Every structure is written in C-alpha cells, then in structure tokens.
Length: 145
Image 1 (cartoon, one colour):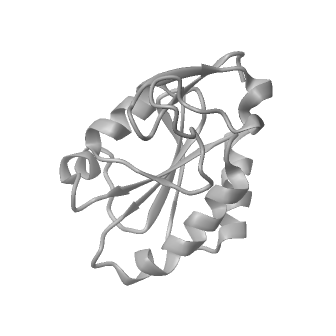
Image 2 (tube, helix red, strand yellow):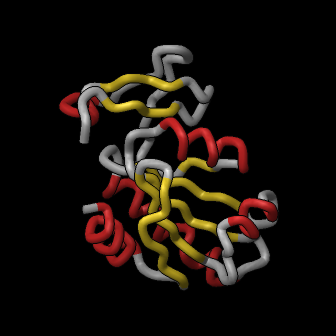
Image 3 (cartoon, rainbow, N blue to C red):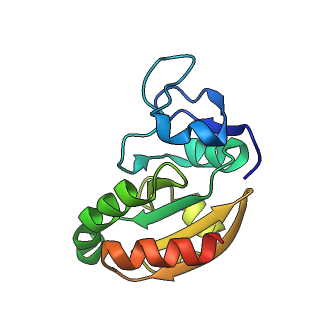
C-alpha cells in the first residue's frame, strides 16, 4: 500500500490522509474527529459507495444484502465479526440492494447475500452465499493479495 493512504470517513465523508504505519493507531477524522475505524461494517448508500470506491486507498469488501433475505440476516453477524478481524487494512461495508437497486443492477448482482471485494475502484472478486466470519476473512485476504 502506498504511503500515506486515503481513508474516507464513514461519518462525514471527508477524505483523510493516514500514514500506512499509523492505521493501527486508531486514527480519527480530521474534519469531524470521529474514529475512522470502529471494528464493524459501515452502511453505505449508492453515493457513499461510489465515494469510498473512488477515494479510499484501502481494499473495500462489500456485503450486498436485503432485509427480506434470511441468509443475509444469518450472515450479518458473521460479516460484522469479520470487520473486527480485517480492519484497518481493509474497509468493510454493507449496501442494501433494496435501497440501491440501480447499483445492484449495474453490478449485475443476481443473488444475495453477495460479498464483493474492490481495490483501486475495481472489482477483484465476488463470493455468493452466507459464509462464516473466518471464511470471509480467509477469502478476503486471499483475494486482496
């Protein structure tokens, strides 16, 4: 990873420059002073997703889900646990396909739950189905390189 990294604040959307060596030092946003990482997935709408994809230097692992989806609800605590294991070297986010149907269509999401790993604004890998936290972590690390 290049130094310093750009990290988008999930609270205010400000882009922060954080030295890679300081990622584990609990950095806070320079604009709103809230933590940049909280050990849990952030919730993004379509605009927030695009902002993180465009401006964040970190790989972004996104869980595409819907409230009516039983397997999505089963996987939610697993994805949250994975966030605690993967941050701050990776950003984890959740996007509701109900709230962002145009994005789901654009990304050709055919089934949920679906995790998709992005780096440098591009999709690198996707995995369908509910999987446990340790498998999410292993899969993400394998594909993030």
